[in-house]
Length: 529
Image (cartoon, rainbow, N blue to C red):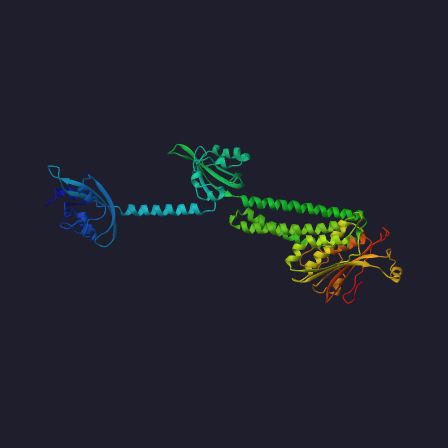
């Protein structure tokens, strides 16, 4: 095919239409090119097409002309080329066979279109789609679309973390299948929305493990004209943590109100017991002890409420920290109030004959974990001569527990706690001078090797709300003294370089129940009996 069979007028027509065109013989040599092609790429006539366009010695991969020569009636391909100025240009090649009168393929005509703008648009769309997909997949909320029947037609991967189902398992299933039974009727009102109306509610959700969760669903209705049906597109936000925090805060508030009621009841009890003097002496201490935890609870509750109102899902960890602080402070209030309750108890002492050594050994067993935690050594010397004496077992166990716990807290790691019991028999002179009601006393000494208690602090250790510890209500030793006095006994404390020792005396023979108890407090330089 030495010459083109295309009339020049047709070539001019293609030029004016903005279409490039050339003809090739069976050897892939260009025999004709219109002026537009020449102006863009140069004159290719007489050259092999693949050498001219790509500088290759072989026919291009996926060449449409080659497909035509192999029998195709039409073949199309797209590839990136560079014009004569070196500018990259995307071309679409559409090849068709040229046949002679006998129907033999003697060459090919190829229409070449510049599709650079279309390719750029396609790339932009791909980038936009990729960006959209990344945004949809990365947002912390579940983005979804429901068809007119309420089934998921789209949902992002966040649903897998929230519900525990794969995306493919959720698609084409109804939203109501995942909603708690009591909220299903409310969710069905979504499908009563008119176009552009919004549904915004919080509902219970049941996940793949059957666990109850909570979600805030905001959904907008719209009309799909192509499908002639309603669609519902929206966002589902996990509110489980927030709901739990709100419930914890509500429970903390209820607990705090309950404890305040107990304070009122204690006040009434003291007034009715003609103990107004105790109120005068200790109102300031009670107010001081309760003010700090109440201030902490109030401050963190307000911070938590502010964060909950701001809908900040990234603050779940901080919100949980606030809740834990609130609960810790409420536990602290409970300890204070429990101490107050113990302090104001007027329960009758119910004595029975028991061996105090057995009760001491039991308390050491229940406190073993705390003792081992500080690697403390217990030096136990329980007098075998004691036998059974008249005691209230429960109150005596509380006394021992308070003193042992105090010794554990005061002792350094690896220290020694000594517990010694025996029978003390006062001299005739002591019986006369002290007007003692018993000729024999059960004696218990609990010593720790902690730091020396200064004399000014030693004088106050049995006073309500006095404490040298960082944590505590300061009522433990006050309650201990009361238990001893209710047994018509006495308690003393001494502290020096050898440690701090509490000594308890309880009469072996029952004394006059109308007699008030008494307490000895010895300074650091003075030894106790």
